[in-house]
Amino acid sequence: MAATSDTTLHDLCKGFGSLLSRSKNPSFPEEASRLNERGNLPLHAACSFQATADVIEALLKAYPGGASQPNSAGNLPIHQAAMWQAPTPTVELLLSRHPEGATVRNQYGSLPLHMAASNQASLEVVKLLIDAYPDALHLQNDDGMTPLDLALADGDSSSEAVIAMLEGRPPPPELTRRQKADKYEERAKALERKLAGLNQSGGRQGKDLHEALLCVRRLADRFPHALYAAGLDPNELELLFSERETTSDAVLMEAVKKRSASVLRDSRGAVMNTTTTTLRGNGPRDRVEDLLASIVGLDHVKSQVRGLRRTTELSDLKESLLPTGRSTRAQQAALSLLPAGLLETGRPCAHPMVFLGNPGTGKTAVARLLAKAYHELGLLRKPKFLEVERMDLVGRNKEQTILKTREVLDEARGGILFIDEAYTLGMASKRSRMDTGIDAMGELIASDGNPLIILAGFPVEMQTFLTHNPDLRKKFSITFEFPDYTCTELARIFMDFAAAKGFEMDVTEEEISNLLEQETTLAWRTERNGRVCEALMAGCRTQVRRRMRQAQLEEDEDFDPNLIVKRDIESVMQTDFK
Image 1 (cartoon, rainbow, N blue to C red):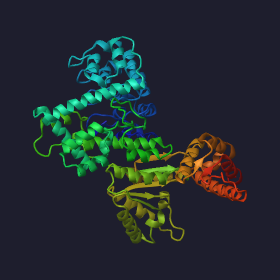
Image 2: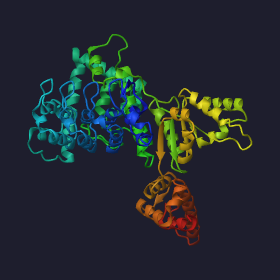
Image 3: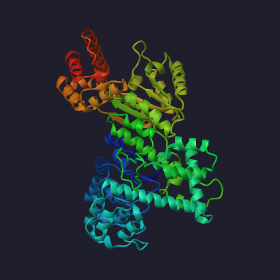
Image 4: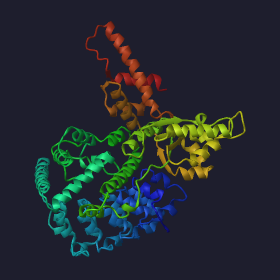
């Protein structure tokens, strides 16, 4: 278990989208046991990024001893899970595999319950840790703090129900939504008054506030997407900077005061609990989340993007805090709050990927969206997407193939190069026994990561292709499987298609799903997947036109040419889907 920098598996654990696919590789058990330079196993990384129980199960199956192994700070995976608000089933699984973990202290004398109490863990997680080690309620860490002390020190951020449990009393009645809103509004006003007082003072705290605002300005200038997590729209902020004649500090103070609540999401896209909720709406429109929301299903892909985003934003925060000259006390204090090891690591990058899936499962569409999302995150210089196939890369001889492949790589530079049916690169031409596709593969393997390359194809063919080309498999180590769409997902995609075309629906998503279940077979849908929706949309437009002609003959003034009715869908499925 040699210590290295973050491995591919460590990175996958930050989003865990591709990890379950990778767990099928023979090398997975060895990878799961590797330590990075901070003594973290991939299991530690997964717990820090709120991995689900199935991901933790896969890592523990590959390396059962991981649950009891501390990192360089003495933290077990259960410590990481408690500190970073891991899901309740994840904590439950870790305790079931290593119950003694609840009794282990890290190098600061903190038990998992200390970590949970000081980091706003859920009531369910706190209860699990108390049940596992009741004595932890009264034990102090090296700073002389009990779990209750830590929760109380967190001030208004701590849950009243958690504090009640730590005190051994029944939880208070749950507040109504109105009461919660009033409470958060009152807290926001108190913070605004405090900020205004600090801004007017000329002492050390005023200087600290100025340094903090300067860091925000650096983020706005260099990594604007990171401001979404704070409820600030970087585009609106840039307009304020250009329109106002006041200082940037005044602009930022006003923006913070008027900001709306940010919609914080975990790696699965679920909205996380937040104590900054206000009455001012659901936060700024986040372009990356908007792009991910347009993808139906494929949660494992979305989670990987969100995990990469979180790592990127932490890195961007580090860059904004690093002093340009002599560091101030405020900057040093802020830097000390960042995760251990972040200061030694550079900005993360997107790795080459493999997309496996049957026809119509969304491989190309998702790759197009990734080009836009990664550009928003600053991982790509351009939102450029270039789709090619074998004929665009392979020539009649070695020299032509190398030239064509290099031209394609140059054209896609700064964006994403998507190679569809990539397994055909391993097939010799029928007119020539010479396989020049291997020369194209050599250029892809030698590429420097710019552009970001995605290989795509059918599952069986691609797995065989990568097995026979180990150097290519090593280069493209991240694999995403695109499963066949369910009837419910196809119905949702069709509804999105209809809305994009300007149609309204006189039928529900559930009714469309039931019709697909009744009128088509699994084998028929598997051959088409998303193309079912395209065919259904084309057929429905034909049905609407027929009804429109009939309505004109009958002089029906109530006919709506933008309405799709259930009969349209039934007719298409019964006549065309056979």
